[in-house]
Amino acid sequence: MFLKGKTAVITGSTSGIGLAYAKAFAAEGANIVLNGFGEPDAIEAARAGIAQTGGAAALYDAADMTRPDEIAGLVERAVAETGSCDIVVNNAGIQHVAGIADFPVDKFDAIIAINMASAWHMMRAAIPHMRKRGWGRVISTASAHSLVASPNKSAYVMAKHAIAGLTKTIALETATDGITVNCISPGYVWTPLVENQIPDTMTARGLTREQVVNDILLAAQPTKAFVTPEQVAAFALFLCRDEAQSITGANLSMDGGWTAA
Ligand code: NAD
Image (cartoon, rainbow, N blue to C red; front, top):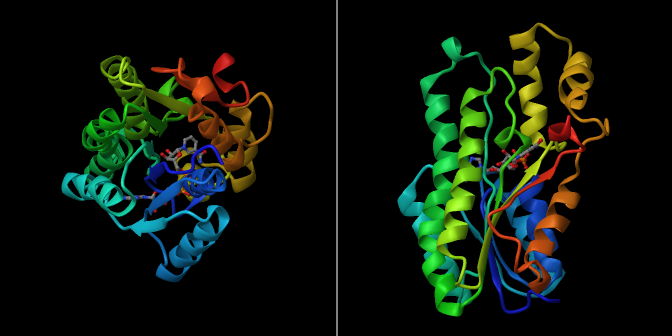
């Protein structure tokens, strides 16, 4: 239980990779602040399950990652109700698949706000609290799309490349503060985010569902296997260990060899 007494705030943790982070950190005794959207009953069931797992506090906060005031409020609530904000995981994200000329401006704005700007606002709010305790971990879920591009994902690729740059910058600013700042860049992970983009990719590229899965998604990954949320969470957990103190400013690929090709 090496995270006992520490609090992890995980954005977008009602689903997919974020929920896996929450379960993994709770199993090591961390207080967890869940965030994200979804059915109230399902969120409460997830919160209650996490509270049972580690025995520490498990809160849910509905802060909208498009709202800087709500992001600051999320961090302040974590500190007020658990005593600290030691680990921040910037994970909330959405996707929209369309060519540049057809890309809706409201979708672009939402992706930039949720996938990119929210990480900056979270770090701005949380790092003073980490500095006070002389220890902190910032982990962002970037993507293989922080390193390489795919057509029809301009906003997402732009946002994820920016996360890699933000990670480097804040790692330098906090290098002597006991804080590490890293991003994990998974390849395709089977979550609702991937499931939901299949119909749009079918339309954009004129393909069947099977062709999208085999020829677009898994074609990118030499291992021909999806990354799992649990693998990503286990990697994040390692970054919270003292042994990972020298890993900072890194963009850590977990993509089945995608970006090696
Ligand atoms: P998901 O759809 O399962 O989860 C996304 C989470 O973000 C949900 O909890 C959702 O409620 C939350 N969210 C969306 N809009 C929000 C908002 N405005 N405010 C607060 N929360 C909001 O998707 P996932 O695949 O688990 O994605 C998690 C992260 O991993 C994203 O940043 C995504 O870009 C990244 N990622 C995913 C994959 C993949 O293949 N699934 C690969 C690389 C990176």
